[in-house]
Length: 478
Image (cartoon, rainbow, N blue to C red):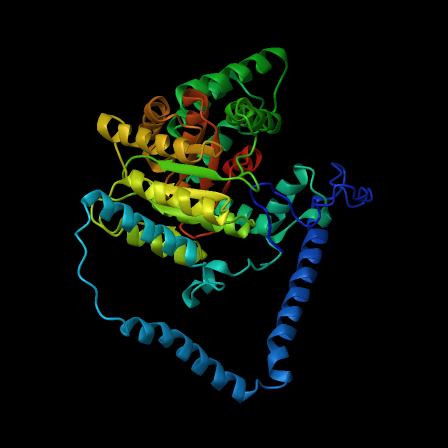
């Protein structure tokens, strides 16, 4: 069963009229968190064993059944071969006709576009992924009952999940997220806990906390907002370290949630039974193409039909890279094989193919560009005009891919692109390769852009929709 990551729904949540669970299974604050985690672990282990048993039965089924009839296997290729060769022999019968006048350049371009469009719509995607994608498409497996699992279960329980609603997909992702933020956490949390100590908070501790937040690239505005709230709380009452940490988490979540609440949707998800077009923009080297491939895999795993437009026609081997990502997720790719093709023409073909097939999501890979290059920014506007003209009913999103390791430079990119490209959200990548994970807070507070997705690893499953509660808990995990 597909797990819809765009809507965070699972088997236990899809039944709107399901009765509430007994009080013993509910994440009661007074209940033992460890016992709750054991219940979730036992349920997931039973599900995994049942699934493995079902797969074994399916694999043994063809062996136990009757073998296929050799006559049918041998006759069918002959029939197909004859059927395929008949048109060829018939085509050779007529005498050759005189050569027609050479078409004009415009007619040649129109004919080539028609051929590409026909080839795209006529060839359905393969039913099975390539053999080398087994590790990418394999379901997550349940590990040991360790601290990572118990922490993941506690995070889900704190969000109101019942033990029977915990999914292996979420447990797997939370473990990846916590591991991806390890570098940021090593510097940030260690210093933070040292500053807090065991005594109540003091103004001196807050001054040290300011330095710690700035070093994590949280940004000046977000740091001032957090410290002002802490100082106001400190003036009213004595704040012990545990309460100070809890209050700090609340403030960080409020900063991240503010632009999300101001956007039309709290969670960015493609609209069902409707064309959605997502453009990925950004400077060179931030991981746009890799992010596009991971988004395609996420869409397929969530049950959406997807198509990729390889509109980065300037970077060497960019089209081949996109095609490789498409093969890994079994997603068709629309590309123009000619050198230095017009990106808008590729998007034109992709929109036409998506409309013909009824595809729900089109992901557009664009060339890397500096926010100061006016002509390249105008190219983005041209692509957007093509989309608006061909599919005025489409839901269009413009997502900036941001490298977390760039810190404050990434913040300046976000603010510049927001003015020139009409951004609707940000994808923060490479959180695992840097200790600057706090840049997500800077983007939300200073650029006012909602964080829509985060990438915490190099694997195809290491990118998921952004959840402020889970991000802050992973950032400040002990």
